[in-house]
Image 1 (cartoon, rainbow, N blue to C red):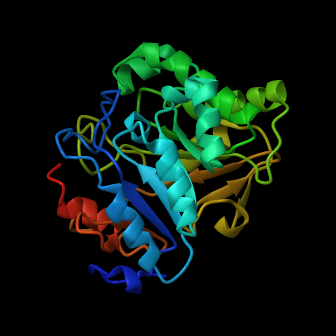
Image 2 (image 1 turned 180 degrees about the horizontal axis):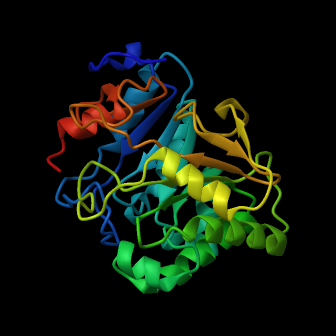
Length: 296
């Protein structure tokens, strides 16, 4: 379902999933980051909890940043979002989740779903090019393995860049499968692996030409020699979109559509994914990011 761009009062929120930018600080400097401004104060979480209590329906709150794990109070935030009656998920670069003790503290607080950014699978050279640091490869691998050992709901996010890491699609599939075997991974839902081209918002690596959904789909079919079936998003754990989902025997793949309209906005009017504004209202995610309230 599509909606017109507008700002909604919390009581009128139409979205199934809301992204909460709880901090603009980060422990990495990725080339593809869409939040280059690091000087914005952290979100006032007491106001966040007041806002969440006003929502008319139970939703998923996705804690994002820059990097949400730099907040020392993240376990408390997770606990309180749950107390407000909502599901909670975390989008992270994974560096701090390389500590099993830290991950367990988030799980004990109520976290069950994690989206890990992994642009190069286990290839240090790709992380050097896209994340400005090959040294990030190892902690990300440990983080993925830790999440699987704790049977978290796993999502991974990978940017496919022309001439840089087309091979990362198959490498990521192989990596997740290997760790599933090594950890004895068991979860109520299969892992979901997301692949997308270069984004159109923020520090968007404009020197690269972005792949289309169809081009990434071609890479998927040409590199994965197995049965791949297009499926409805409702059978996955994802509520951000309703298209471009594929089922393999043991995992799901989503190809993210960064196609933009004449105003440069991708995925305009998506009813499923919204964003919490600076004054604690809600708005369509990408339109709001393009509107640049936070001064990116």
